Amino acid sequence: MQKRTEIRFILILTLLVLPVISCGRKNESTVSRTGYFFDTVVTLKLTAENADSLADEIFDMCAGYEDIFSAKKEGSELWEIDHRSSNTLQVSDEMAELIQRGLYYNELSGGAFSITSLPLSELWSVTSDDPHVPEGSLIAEALESVDDSRVHIEGNVLSFESDDTKIDLGAITKGYISMKICGFLKERGCTSACINLGGNVSLVGGREDGKEWNIGLQRPFAARGELLTSVKKKDGCVISAGCYERYFEADGRLYHHIMDPATGYPAESGLNMVTVIGDDDVEGDALSTVGMVLGKEAFTELLSENEIDVRVIFADNENEISYYPE
Amino acid sequence: MKHKIIQKNDILLISAILLAACFLAVFFFAKEDSTEGAFLEITADGELYGRYPLNEDAVIDINGTNVCEISNGHVSMIEADCADKSCVRMKEISFEGESIICLPNRIVLKITGCASAEEGVDTVAG
Image (cartoon, rainbow over all chains, first blue to last red; front, side, top):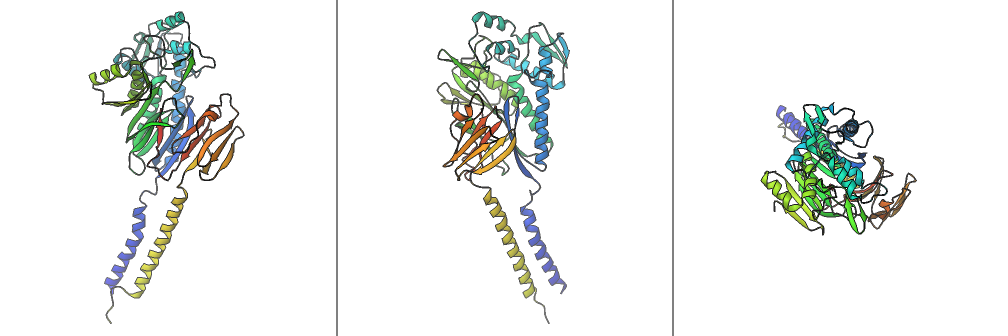
């Protein structure tokens, strides 16, 4: 009699437990959100136990970073730096960290990457209502204040050697923010997230089904969403720089927003797009710009000489694809 | 009298539980089914404005500022009250991950939830 009860008990227990096991992830949910920061679209998809509140916190983080790094937002920390009255200032940890990294990539790239090219991009103002090619004398004048070696950061003390040096971290800010977001998500136990910060893609783990994310690369100068190719990846980042996003045309020529600090003109390196696939978002953001400025040959030389562990996809002016490593 | 290990009542009980499980399974799969197939997802100012199945032709007014159209599974923005109208000039979209964005009015049209998600991409870099 007792044996029978036991068997019956085990049977029922098994039948009850089975569905619970199969729904082992029932506490996790997936959210997709879209928002706007830094004049760009932010989309994110993440799977976690408290996905909704994590998404809220991420948007709060974005707003917080905008108050630090936006060169255009009056009253932001960076705006205050560029409108300073003294050439020695105390800056936040975040600002110090990002300036330091910017200066590092300036040195690494031999000046192709610059955090002091704001006078140049302001002069060109490619995204203004009425963009035009500035006069050569004005370009030469603006170029004189483009010199990262006049910026020094020690701890949280930022100092400038000259009054007219202005900082713009726009080329690495998005990478910095997505890196911080991913760090935050991992800390909170999120195992699957895909963050798109104005075209910069940053990943935590794989998809919710465990497979690799499938990241499409925008085909330069084509309809938004039309793809050049795609990349499968878990973790890390996929970051593009291209001349097709912000540009104007004059006299049959195209003038885009990626300035070559050596010439004072938009970079002309025979490339439409450089996409860096790696593990460090700030590095990816900086290097994609360096690639656009230096061109494929000089850039791949730089990567292999410094043994930088990234993959790169190039699209030349005809949108022909090539890769590094080949 | 010697008891059998499993009696008639036990079989009934097990059958009942299995039957219930089948019903639950059907219920869950049916629910999942309803989220499959491609959708047009419209977000306005970061908030979800609506989801529309791609297999039903429709003309959708968005906040009185933009109008988009679903036709034969393709989505295009047909009207916008902003100055640049770049969203109206964008090519129509139909594959998962493709999007049309109206930045001035903060409206995003995006294709989601394709049945063949393998072919679609999760997001677009660039």
